[in-house]
Image 1: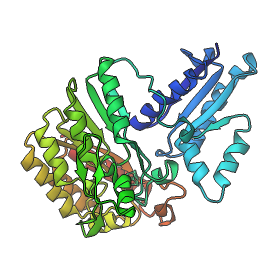
Image 2 (image 1 turned 60 degrees about the vertical axis):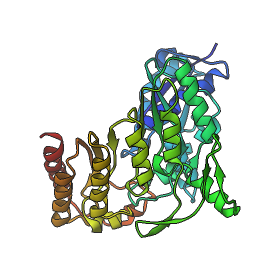
Image 3 (image 1 turned 30 degrees about the vertical axis):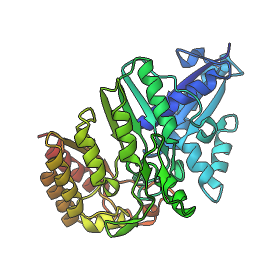
Image 4 (image 1 turned 120 degrees about the vertical axis):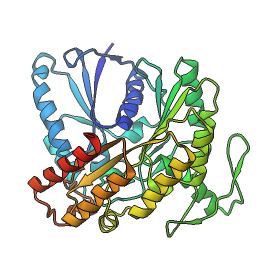
Amino acid sequence: MPKYFLKTFGCQQNVADSERIASFYESRGFVAAQSEEEADTIVINTCVVRERAAEKVFGLIRNLSYLKEKKPNLSFVITGCLIGAASREPSGKMLRSLRERLPEAQFLPLEEVGFEYAPKRAAGKLASIPISNGCNNFCTYCIVPFSRGKERSRAFQDILDEARDAIASGRDEIFLLGQNVNSYGADFLMNALGEKREVFLLPDGKEVKPVLVKHLNRHRIPTLFPHLLEAVATMPGVSKVSFISSNPWDFSDELIEVIRRNENVDRTIHLPVQAGSDDILKRMNRWYSREEYLALLGRIRAAIPPVRFTTDIIVGFPGETLEDFETTLDLARRAKFDKAYIAWYSPRPGTAASKFPDDVPYEEKKRRWKELDALVNKR
Ligand code: SF4
């Protein structure tokens, strides 16, 4: 039987995608190889969030090319965000350049894998379950809306079925994954609204009204995430439910209430703030202000006293002055984060921010990174 070896770069969502990619290959008669040397096909699940993603893939294939001498039929398959970003780039330049540099590699778009393959999970108690893919928010620094495309929610019942299967197979911790889990189901409600349906029906018969509401000065549609989270948390056999990643602007009072009344929902909440200055938040196309963010933390803390927060912050974003950075330090002090994942800004080709002058010198980005890291992570 042919053997595949799967190499995964990037986040938890990529790890979950790889569980499905493994099943995709096994359904085609492949078995897992223990190492690259054993493999007939090497599948590389790529990440573009970090810099020079394509270069890393070229480097990896170069390093492994000695295997071709022993096994001329060895094939390389590139999948994940790099292929997503290249195939959505309108000029086609990125895809052409990938094809030129990797003439022998095959490209596997994640859409071909889809959700229909039961994931091949690693051993343990945890089951990671993707609930949506893509993102509509277009934060100006972020490549995800290009690499993963428009946000598409997975059917509510499919998610529950997958959670049930995971519990039946001995898992008791469920990790719900999406680029913005809080907006889960907004696409279903928008469709219902477009079709002028009075209510959207959940699998348990609950009715949700598809109506636009005013939220943070914008008209938004409430989402189905609180319902989904509650449905998973109340399943017999679930000892813990976590979710990532959460967007502050979709974190509703309804969601806070669902977390409060279900004690098995993780009390550590990851809530990326990205910057503490309103000017920078605007330039990032994040739709909340620093005060709205801090007020949200306050509401969650008041409702769920043992809650802890982790966050993501970018330092050295284009135009970030010393004063802007000071406001980020101030927000971090007031927010009392348990941990911050801090990145210093570097442009991602194709994003809106890549056209802004990258005007904070590298050494200064590094200095700000160190200062913030010392404040939040080295206390
Ligand atoms: Fe990227 Fe998250 Fe912003 Fe979506 S919400 S564009 S995934 S940073």
